[in-house]
Amino acid sequence: MLRKNRSLLNGLIIILSFSIVIVGISTYLQQSEKNEQTEETATEPGNQNGSDKNDNSEEKPELPMWYTDGTFELPIVGAAGYTSVKQALYEEPDSNAGSLQELSPGTPFEIRGEVGGYWLVRSDTFEGWIEHRFAFINLPDVIPSIIYNHTNSYDSRFQSSRVEIPELTGEPLNPMIEYNDRLQKEEFIMPLLYQTAKKLFYAQQLALQNGESLVVYETFRPRDVQLLVNDSLTQLVEENEKVAEGIADEPWSMTWFINMNVSNHQRGIAIDLSLAEVEGIIDQTIGDYRTLTVENYTEYIMHTPLHELSAESAIFERPIASADREGWKDLTINSKMTEPSLKLQEYMVEAGFNPLASEWWHFNDVDALEDLEKEAGSGEFYIKETFNSVPLWKDLTLTKE
Image (cartoon, rainbow, N blue to C red; front, side, top):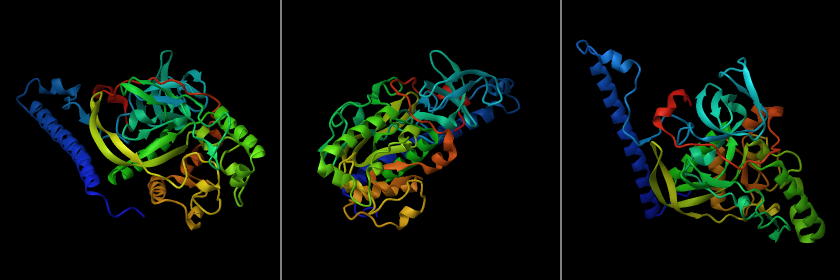
């Protein structure tokens, strides 16, 4: 259940934040109407040059503007993307078109346009079209209002029964952070399958409407890191009786806390995240567009720390298959679950995600899993860099989100 009572300060923050959005959208709509009237006047009989002048041009809106035409806070044009599997690079947005080359899994690129199920992509060495069904998009490039904190880049939080895991806890397992040219700041790299990213944007909208924000800790996890966590935890279980009891407390087992096979993190359809109360939000400009960024926040305290790999972290009193869309709704909630963790689950479920019974922070996109089936990636690569650029209004001619 969502809290019914909000503090006066939080209410003012929400009102201010959405007033900014409304004013921005209203300004854009007014400008668009003005542009349409200008075009109509220019093409009236008696205006001898009007038709020629406007046939091949579009009236430039007042910039910076709010982006209201797509499925994210910012256009996908200029955002960073990655292949999740081996993919053909086509000459045209058509699988029957000639193939220019084959891109290896984990290949970084910049998105330059979208037509149907294809992206126009480029890097320093290639340019062409790929099927975006199998591709990742970098979340900070399109949803900057989310709070990102990839702790595995600098200080892994993995533990079990509150016991540190040797060679894992506190270690930089997978550095994914660099200077982001699009955002003009250092930012974490957070790749997620394109169709899954759209759902996450909706979940963030739900949170913002209640004066809250998602805090994303991990999206894509390389296969090698997955195996490292599994091996390190297995060794600790063999050596520590307390850990062994906490992770194999019936009806649970270790596989519920770290998948020994390919996990949904490798496929790009799983996300680890928490929830925060927004205390300050600002209007900022990125390229030709305005967007909101959370400036101050307080992260909620959940019933266990994130990445606490034991039965303590469970959402329900017993496990259920992660791909079961409905069965989990009949399960008994873990009595230790806090109100914020229940709210996080509510946001994510409404956006189309499935909760993982054993971890309050982990959610899966079952739709994407069923869509990709055996074609899903295995995550046998690392992602270390981004190719992106600031979003410009004039570059959106090929975007059809």
